[in-house]
Image: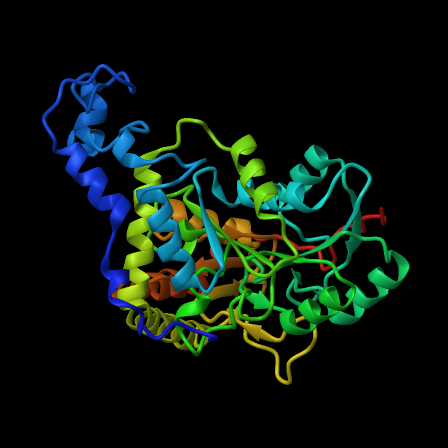
Length: 415
């Protein structure tokens, strides 16, 4: 189904990994195991003042009750199975080294030295690391580019067809979906093309873990036919930074190779704080996902409506009619163009962050991108609108330097 409607089995209320970790954290015992702070007893006083000591009680190693991330048979296995059910996957792996690790693992699982892999120019650097480690040969496709707003969109189905015609021996295709700015290409068509050529579609869905939970969000990668989806659960949901998931479906991916690649790439001392946060984030979305995303969309729409009324500032909107490189937009991403104010995105970001107490997710030459989640409030939106209004009002003051942004990025020669 295209989105989760919270109609999950009762078992989705369970948090097996977090519950077990909580029991062990509060259990009285004499620790002669790692880590050296011994459940917080030896932690730095400065760190304890900042975080409190309770969190360190849960900073435990792979005790028998806590299972083994690389050979799960107990609570990790159960937690991953619950996650696969919620996110629409056939199998899910918890990842503690970020989506970077998941992307590299997906490449290692599909490509060997000398194999060709098709990927967009605006791929994340983790894919480049995957190329280096695997020895795969990149076949780059240029994404659609809009010089008017200085943004790269998605690659198109037609570009994928051309690449596969020129390189029919390619072993896999990677798609960035959505982009950092929330732009979504025609993933269904691209998945169909990849499968017609008998290769898997690997999707960097780092910014789209929330798609599965609301009908007014873009379709999720798995629902669109992807074979692999790597999601940064920490970016848009409630997991801790660095906590991600790798999902697969179908028979085009060797599951054993995924497992071996993750074992090669991840720490042998995985943080149970991160793992438990994935378990908790999954339960939260299973029980309340649609409500949380409804609220998030309302906040984003409120911000978009108010910001578009500020003179000299424009907000990226979905293209009508849709184009192959820009089929739809994740409304929870607000990409604001400030060039009409005589500012670069970097200058506006510096003012917002250092003077006005508002911090964007991503500044660029012409734009700033703001990520809105269910962790934000109406007060946050008010602060954002007020700060942008103040910048627009005073942009000609001598304290607000101006720049002359380039209209085109530098040309990169093909591989």
